[in-house]
Length: 289
Image 1 (tube, rainbow, N blue to C red):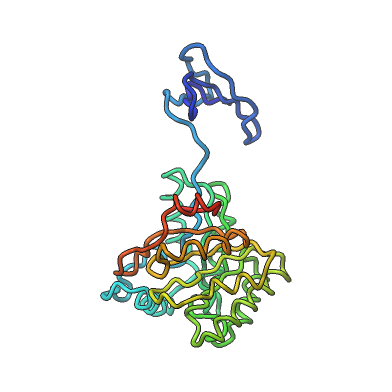
Image 2: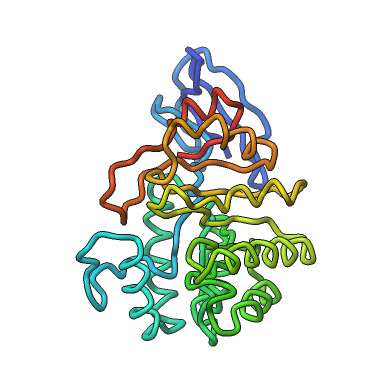
């Protein structure tokens, strides 16, 4: 099969891409517009690029806004409370249907690789069970990576450590965390130590919601320096990240192979004060937008 009459980035001519066994075998320039043979795809001189990546989504909570109540304050913590209420009525089929609908929307907009956080602070791990099934069901549409995410904490939620361990043993790909949501700072630090050790034991990646809070004194990101050698995603909430701190944050994040995702929190009414992607890039820091 071929894709013909395609435009490529930074190229003037039209190109043909030969596909075989799901792989691009060759890319060749065209001297003129071609007519499509049976089975070919005519790009009609449109740009052909690799698929997009969605690095952070919560497919278990997708399409639940207003259920059972709206987040009237617009704050992150009320949003978590509202989800905790909705979580009580979650079923495997409910989660499956909502996730597949959202995956369809992602696919329609060119997204192929998705990392989703799944709340595992649920003794039945219902959402995780559903998402593991969705991962298999949608494998022909997207590459889905699942984060075991302790939405209500690891140390502060009853049986949090056991639930995280079970989630990884069931098939979650990535170890998550939320240290600033723990009841005390000591528990937050302890949760980071636990999740790092869990990831090391199982050979998993780490993706932590770190200091995603309006309090500028939240400093759990500093704990990464004590655990060198781990690749980590540190998703920081902008209100807690004034630009003047960038010279301190960036070297630490860079040395830990962290990836900054400097987006404004959609749940927080506070204006964003984060360092820009340009600043992160200049500092040699990986950034996802």
